[in-house]
Image (cartoon, rainbow, N blue to C red; front, side, top):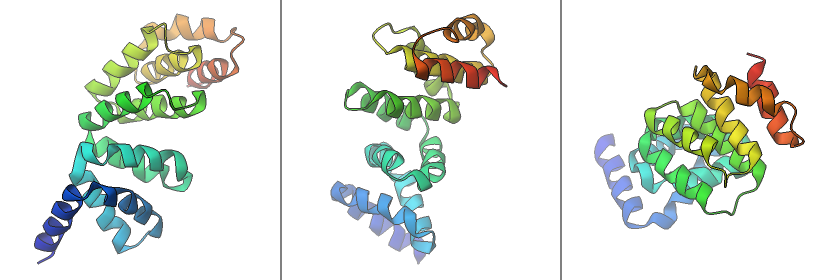
Length: 168
């Protein structure tokens, strides 16, 4: 009975994607409806990623839930994060949050994107250091020298990211 109704809801949301932000909003309720919204959003996969990323930045109390959902979505979420970051509409600190999220996800696609960000000279210094820090925290110690050098940079965001990851 419940599976049939959930399947109906998922197909309705797939045909009307403007409903997805309402599901993200329902995550704030912390009851059965929020759990159902979470399950539906995960099932929607890549279709839900842009709304989830928007919610990640606008709903700080739900970030842990959204991070878990993006991790459950997996590689489809990484593709969405790559596109969202490339849009250029985000500030440095918002991009840094996404870079940290990639580190939290810890799958082959997220590691690949982190490696790409770390070596891309067009990416601002703070986010290059964030990417190196995330890789370092995932066990990739080859970025240690880069992070140590970043402790002396004039970029405050980069210094913080380097110092934070080197404290572990």
